[in-house]
Image (cartoon, rainbow, N blue to C red; front, side, top):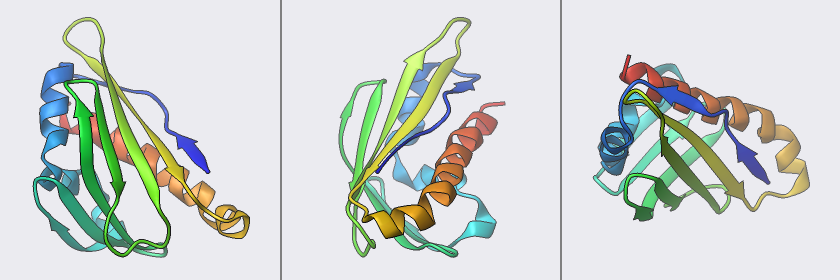
Length: 133
């Protein structure tokens, strides 16, 4: 299953957004407080419980300076997945971000989680833009 979020304009430059996202401790600001519990993070990993979806863990495994951050599933997750964060420079000291999620999910589970996951990931890029307003 693949999910690509909306492309979100961010009111700061690409390098600043990239540096913020390279520290996974900052990811807590992206997740809606009312939807997560048990947040734990380091510079390279984060784990949490997402209400109504279960545990989720992310680990940064690679990056391309200022443009791409590769994240893999980490710890106790219900399925294996990758989540890639794409950044691009725009005019007037702004940038654009979007996420692409790829998960190995059976068809039954896909029917149940595709819509909530799509909404969840779109909310992450929206929250990223709000940090820089």
